[in-house]
Length: 223
Image (tube, rainbow, N blue to C red; front, top):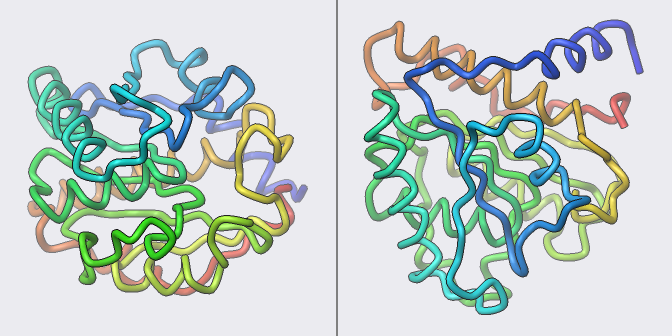
């Protein structure tokens, strides 16, 4: 790990979310167990909220997106700028489906190892255009659930910053990332980007600073 990467990771452990934003974690199929980085982050930041599903074993995109919608509405009641969604796997698809239905209240999204829409037959339900809020899409080179090239193709449509984390599988508990401070550094960067968009006066017209970040940014030295 380089000195700059260590500095970024150290800063992320002191991550402060502005009061006008609420972080919502959106786990994937079967939820995130205690060893998953999402669960570890929730322990580290108890003010964050998890989007809970009625049935974690049933990947129903309409039902899961509805739960994301409920979480975003709750976030809007306590945070003026709404929710920052930290999604993993099928949780990414639920987040994106809700963004297609109604992006209001979503300030930004960290999309980690999205599930393959074609495997679930839901590609037609996802947006195929630049989203009206900043996003960072993180993908592994050897994810068994979604080829990195496919993930990055979708991310380019959404206007996401694309991040290559090397060979770490599905970026879950089995990946051995622990608390994944490099992921927190990415979330910190996303929060800063949201603040920059807010300073520019419009979420619907993203700033050039994040709009230009569609080329792959490799974080392999982090892992």
